[in-house]
Image (cartoon, rainbow, N blue to C red; front, side, top):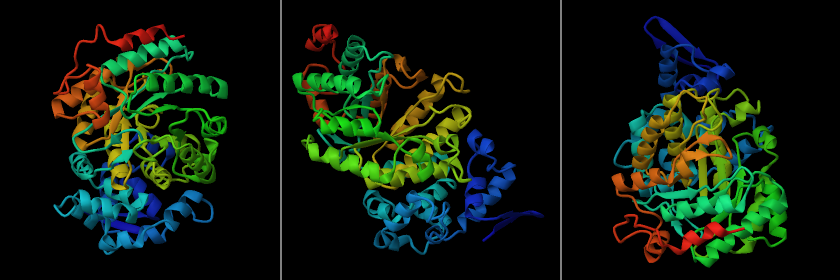
Length: 459
C-alpha cells in the first residue's frame, strides 16, 4: 500500500513500506549508490512524517523481503514474541519514539520489550531520532553476557585486544599482545584476524593465545576470526576454541555471499557449546556486521542499508552471542562517505542492537580514502562511551597493519575510561590489579619490570 504526506502544496507518495523506510533514512552514500535515497531533504522529512504514522503491527504483516524467499525474514516472523510485544502493540512508530524517550523506558522495561521488537521496527524508529536521542535510549539498555568474565555491566567498558600481524608472525603478535595487556586491553576478547584461513595456521594461533591465557591466568576469552567452517573443523580436532566468529548480514542472499546459512550457524553454536570452555557463562558466539555489506553483495532487495543492518541483528540474537561488533566505517566511503555519516551510522547500529537485546560493541573506524580523520573518531568514541557501548577495539597506534584501516588504540580506551569513569570487566580489572598493571583506582602503573614483557621472546 502507498504511504503519503503533504508538505505545503507538495504531496509525497511512497509506494510501499520498503520505499518509505529508505526515503526516511538520514543521507548516506550507500543509499544514493543503491538508488533508494530521498532526492531532497524535504522528501526525507515527508517520509519521516509518514513513517511516524505507521502502526508497528504493519511490520508483522508487510515483509520487506518476501517470507518465502528469505530465511532471515522467516526467522524474524517465526520467532517474534507476541507477549513481549503486547505493551506496545497499539503504538505507531512515532508513539514508540515518544515512549522510548519517556521515563517509562528504563532498563527493566526495555529488556522485557526486546523480544517483542523486530529489526524493522527498531530501524524505523531510529530514523525518527536525533543523535542525542539514539545515545540517551541506548544508554538505558543494559545487555550482560558472560564467558570467563562479565561484560556489559553499567559503568564498565571492555576492549577487544586486536594484535593482528600481516604474516601471522608469533613474535609480532606477542609484542602487540603484551602492549595491549599492559594498557588494560583485552577483557572483551583477545581476537586475531588471521592473514590466512587455513586450519593449520588458525590452530597455531589458537594454541598460542590459549597458552598465554593459561600461563598468566587471564580471565578473558580468545578468538581467531576465521570462517565458521574452519572453526568447525578445529572444534572437531578439539582445538582450544573459546568463541566461534562469523561475519553476518541481514538477508539470506547476503549471508550466502559469506558462505553461511542459519543452519550452519546453528551447527557451529551447538559445537562450540559442547566444548564447555566457559567458566562463568555460555555465550560462545562473536558476530561482526556493517552497513553496506548486503548492498556490496547485490543482496539488499532494494532495502536501505541501515534497515538491512538491523535485520542482521535478528540473526545474531538467535544465537545468544557474547559479542556483536558493527565495524562501522570499514567497508568504505561508497557506503558511508564521511565522518558525519560514519558517526550517525554507528549511533544507529548501537541503538538498534541494544534495543533488540544484543551486547553491542563498535569498531570506531574508517578507511584511508574516506572523508574522515581521527578527530571524527575521537568524537564518535566519546559519544559511544556516553551511550553505554559494551566494547571497542584496542589496536597498537590505532592502525591495523594487517587489515589496513584506522581504528582505536589502547590509549583511546584509557582516555574513555578516565573521562567517563568507566572500568574494565570486574574479573579482568581484579587481574590487572593483582598483576600490578592497574592500581585500586583503575590507573595504569609503570610496567618496566612486568613478567609479561618476557612474552616478546615467543617463537
